[in-house]
Image (tube, rainbow, N blue to C red; front, side):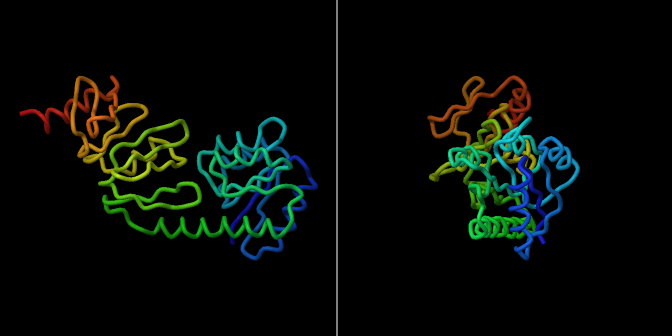
Length: 237
């Protein structure tokens, strides 16, 4: 069973979603909240699989609440206005539902969430071998060969992974969390916004790194000493 919570300042809207959850055999409603602040405090100490959350609420919007979460369950936004849909997808929501929410649309969103959770659980069982990693991007989970990565760019709550001869991949991750998964003999943080693949560096000039004679990455003061030690070990003749 996938545990859910509902966050909506309208009790009637909560009742509708609760009834839909009860009809769905793989969902279980753990709790519902009309107060988003109380919901956020609950989520600080409890983990759930899916959150059904309204976008427009007093005190804090659904989007802002989701942005503050340290971990990201499946998010399904509910809203009376489709103009907010794009904002919802910017925080990597799995789907959004327009009010009043009918059961067929609810069911589609619930199955989409289940499919993603099942795939994610499957991936967690795979042991890393320093050759690849799995990244969630939009509604897909993508395998990325580590040797294909040139550098990784941090962009607020997202990272953009730049690869050889392939389109860059965006994912809702922090640069720090991604750095912890990468082998430190191959990758190095050189700036608050950049991790580089050490094997892909083609040129070093002053305090900058060059890839393919065109992409220039700065080495910030904070990381300069560690990077210089690497250069001294591997580049100096």
